[in-house]
Length: 335
Image (cartoon, one colour):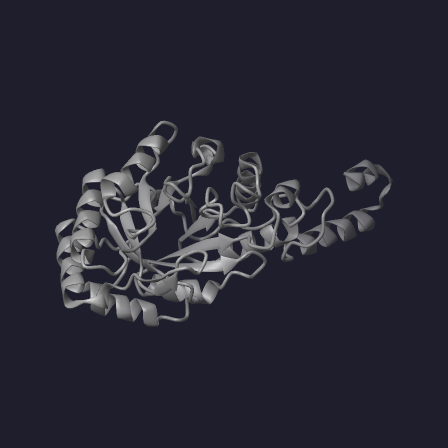
């Protein structure tokens, strides 16, 4: 703190100039390093998520790669599922600004925004070292200024070898260090409106890495969000697709579990698989389920999968009946 060391030699006028300079810096969007960079300079968010961390009901959500303003997925999902989703999840590349207005639009219309922050072209080790602190501070300030809650996932499917931050490219210790670093900067900036969602892929034949080394710790995680799909690769039963991973995680975390991304591939068993998904999820006590209602190539581009609810009348009926029977469809909107 060079300013403090020289304070005895400053005149009163110089002290006032220095104070004004620091105030202007505090109101900025967070560029540059130095001694002042890590200070808590941003007012706390208007919204506080503590009351949302232990939901009493089961949410029903939808996820796709559109922006918050592209509301068509919500409208389509509402028609197919028979109710408006409670969660709208989307992906945001590392380095992009937060869309406060778009997220406010979602929250106003009854959807908890969930942002999956994707560091595709960024080294997690560099993030942990502070290389991108200016961006993290700016993002934290932008999210804090948004007057609503945000569920935030960072570097999801960190145990997936298809990701640039997966086991073949990044050490678990670097993932944990980067997660904690981002979380700590948000805390320093006074952000109170973020629900931190740790989102591994379910453990299966393609994702065999142990999950404990990737866990940042209970103090850094609010919800566990599992990702897994009913299909020819992941599995076709809740007991084999999700249950083993939930048991593994229960050994080191007691946080609420959200199925953060799932779907059922088109097949002659789709109706039965939908029934199994909702019944298994309800029995397991998850706090919600987020559906990927799209057609998409499986990682590697070898197979086009159709995860949409509307692939058949029977699939749509099974989704509506089973989601209602399992109590899925709990709005987070509190006023």
